[in-house]
Image (cartoon, rainbow, N blue to C red; front, side):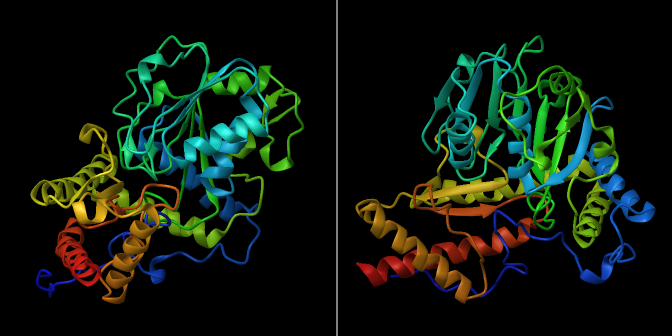
Length: 387
């Protein structure tokens, strides 16, 4: 028999892993629109772009000697820009344990066509052996596997005396996890992940070592205009002062400034991390009490606190072939959306069949607490209907 249908619903049913939920209390009326309809190169709009850079650096604790820029095409554009402009100077170790890491590996092999590439793979739910990474080579990795719910535990495996550059796709970790910036030379993220901003804008942070690479090495391949970070052997510093390569959305800029101000008001990075970890704990406590569901991560110490990925481990569900499992997940997700209690919580299309609940700082723990009984009800109902 299905469990009783819950009565209480989340106040905010948005649990998407990207774009993610807006901050609590968000309203379009809160945004400053003075820069709309103006050139982004004009003094006031450019100052707003520079403010996004400065406030991001301050709240995140990015070292003063790192450069930060707003770049086109979200996190993907930022990471591609970094790879195309800096890889090829030495061998590369690529870590892949979910779809985005696999995508970077594919681009390095198929598009850049580098010869000296070591691919270190692990299946969804696991991490590669970090002890085998050679940081005298360039290293490509994601801090948090958005589609697998598995994050690296720390940066201890990265040498302080490395000769290569570390390239970190940090898009679902920055503003939610403790990032050891001094261990990282290139970090990218996007506005629409942890702070719930709007799409198409990426952020790129470069260490002094990364800047040195840009000024001393020229790739063998041609670079599209939107990837060009250096001119005549010198990094274009105006890019890191708010002069974007392409035309940004000033409405999205104001939205990001609103999110940054909220983050500051609640206590900055420490508060954001605490909120995300609290969301993970709510789900962890619930998983421990329910034998039909588990984390996709094989080691709970590596559980993501943002993209929280769950697998249904009930014997009835596990006995189904993958296509049947995906159909059942789709039915479960649709039933919760129809009830208005959860939007966009199906697992990523390339991941094993399951659920994915966003637990970043813009999500209230009370909403996750209200969601969990609905997950039990939905699963029980679907199981009863399909046996």
